[in-house]
Image (cartoon, rainbow, N blue to C red; front, side):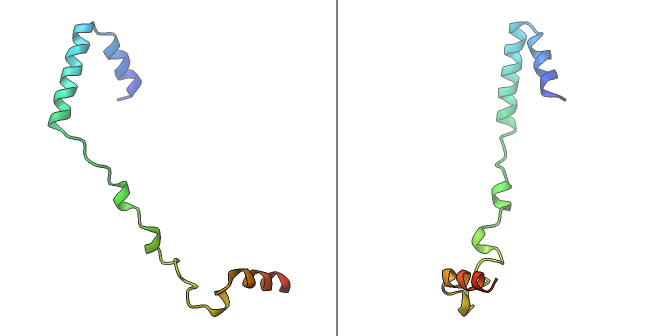
Length: 75
């Protein structure tokens, strides 16, 4: 159901009925507690990505500034 449609239906009710809806929503929230979002647990840590450290053992990459200068010089 669309949110705008729900809001329109609720606002068309008399104030007493709107208060009953609020009470019912509060009851439902206690009965069905919000579940924590799982998106954070699905995100991999950057340090665990396979590309991190892939050039760690390359001797020519020890000094990245020199490596870039050398590369540019040859281009």
